[in-house]
Length: 347
Image (cartoon, rainbow, N blue to C red; front, side):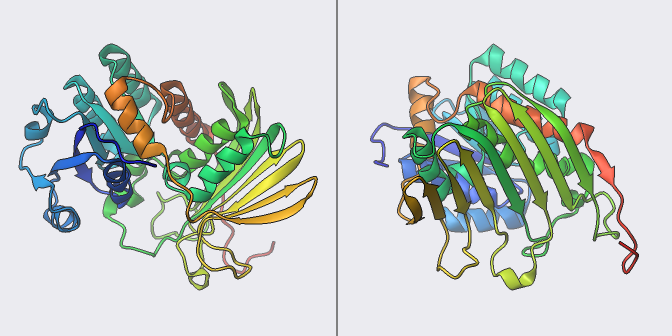
């Protein structure tokens, strides 16, 4: 994507998840200017400003909120205060892009929706498994071109590694992190809506469990969801069971089933042995094709920048953003908890 020559100044509030680096990169690659950062944690702020020395650290977030020249704020603050932070940003006349989960309760979602409607500002959740993944963008292009006919179902798998980096205490507190479906499965809810074209959807069933981490009982290390939309159906499985032998933090996959073929994405690794990430496999009436998507351009940053400047909805509609969030929250709220069997117990 070509960088914009139009000015857009943005700042950062909250650095509590490393996704903030992808969020920041998306806007910098689009041509936006990063001017300031606010974070309560000295270590997080020092790492961020080392990576982005143009970001002036401010001790008070009001230095960002009251600066009329700043048009967009990106945030990966702790999830339980993400909604309040976004509302404050919007009520100061700025658009906001937050990490997922955008919010962690249906009450928070209602408050964000009200603030967005009253202010007319953009509330965007950076669903990185779509917006920052080149194979997923290529799949979007192929589906739009009719490569597999009408999409009828998605199967989204989001395995993660629990010990690939240090986890802060709040990560293990459900009231602060939101739970595994609220958190990780928000990605798959977004992709389900996007690829099936569903504009309305419901959670048919959902499960959560803590199978392998009794020392952190509030952690949910497994979750699954069955979705039904007006454009198709979807199945989601997310977990924290990625083994050390994989070599990356998770073997994220997406299968998109169409009436004339299917697409499978191996987003971060191909365990069959092809090097690198961003692998797409297309199976249609003519045969089987592997596509290396490593050079595919990512449009989210440029489109969001244009939306901020032009007051449009090209990166993602507000309705889609809210519905993807709502599905993940409802799946978490209604989930049946599965019980772990004792190690070595009978199957």
